Image (cartoon, rainbow, N blue to C red; front, side, top):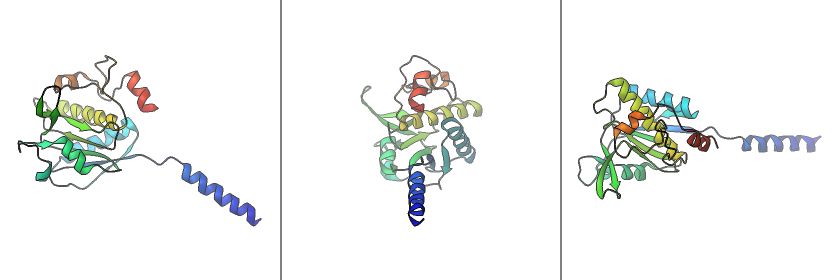
Length: 195
């Protein structure tokens, strides 16, 4: 009898250890962020990727993540400073930039940047708000957040030619983001996420 009880508890322990752990994405406000935008991102990520989102307390902007011009923040420095084992979507209202080797530019303004694959991405609302009513801004914000999390999940920029896919490379233009369909991945990108 004792032997069966021991085997039963060992089996329960092994089975519980092999259960997949739920994925969680933490949303990290970097500086002041509108709570409406935080709730919008949380609900969009949860419904699209079926990942639980938790919003962390605000952390302040610091001089060590400023770009060399000191007028905006360096996206790669932000990623490096806050990279962790947690899945982390960092959101700021300040302008962010990164080096663009193809264009020979040290500070290329970007909407977001994410490790591919990885656990950390950063999104700025600064450029997404330009010439946009609230509804358009919110659509842009959702697309860019889902795009950068897609990179964290291992998706590369889409090469299917489908302009509706959110994994298209914006190439620095908001027009590409506006042409994409909210919450849409082409068949190829969808298969990669599902696998």
